[in-house]
Amino acid sequence: MRIAIIYNEPKQTEPQDHWVSRSQSDGLLVPVDFVDSSEYEVVRQAKKIEGILRDAGFDTLLYAASDSKDLCATLLRERPDLIFNCCETLGGNSKLEMNIAALFELLGIPFTGSSALGIALANDKGVAKSLFLAHGVPTPNWKTFAPKDQIIATELNLPAIVKPIREDASIGIDLNSIVEDQSSLAERVRFVWKEFGQAALVEEFIAGRELNVTLLAAPGGQLCALPISEILFDGFPHDKYKIVTFAAKWMTDSLQFNTTAPRCPAELAPALEKSIKHAAVKAAEAVQMRDYGRIDFRVRASDGSAFVTEANPNPDLNEDAGFARSARASGRTYDSLIREIVERALQRSAKRSGPS
Image (tube, rainbow, N blue to C red; front, top):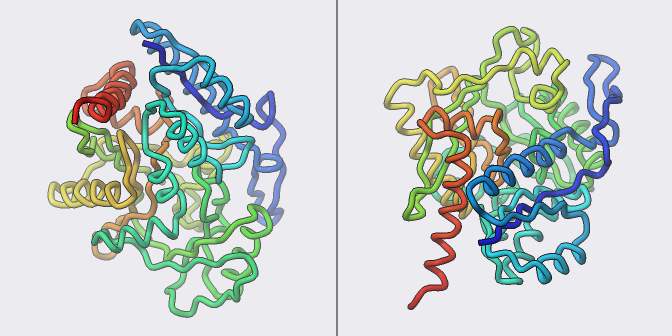
């Protein structure tokens, strides 16, 4: 059986080691042109997965997608039996993530992870939150602002966090993302419009704990929650809101990176753990997540209420990332995790092509 591991080729051939400040007042650093190191983590992830599957006896093809025409021609020529989908962008455009999956569907090639529709639903944060509410999943109050909208959000309680509506990996989130008044809210929304060319989501900030729930499909396809992970903010600047910024995820020499640390399993009361896992599965079902994914939560310090903030249908699968960490806490090895994802996709494919 031949498996193609398809990943997005970074916009640059070498990682950026030069960083510029877009906020001189507090020294926040972001990569030049927002070419972020998460793209290079995808390369590392894909190469590791390819090695695991090759060692497991599969005939593997590792392919970096940078052009839709070449990707289509390659798949038609090589005709893999299955695609391990590691694509998060195409040509650096994260809005095209769903299109890659749609291409696989049009070609009739089975692939791991969520469908094109599932990716689209989860990756539009406003749509995802509407679906959470429709399925009875608590999520913080929010409002979206498309470019040129009038920026008025008097119905929201402040502080709030402002995010690009279609980015992941904390792209566009820094210590200035939390706004405390209508003036700073409008300024930050315009920043998102200008820098990312997309709508902004403004979400009431939940002061409290940051939790991540890894989901993995059982043999029957039902998503199950693995041990919950928590991001600890020990040593985080005391005068700053405790959020997982881009720097905290990717900039290893930053204070934010070095004062945020994961703990898995998280220390939770049994009742809270049970309710969070239940809400995570419901949230995943709301956005039609498939095979695996991650649901992010904030737990309000004042009363212990848990809120789903985002759904990630294509999380970082690197061995040192949170998804694999939760899998290890469940008793799985990294190699067995990757094989399990492949098995679920193959089982789904066999079921679809079998007798009616």
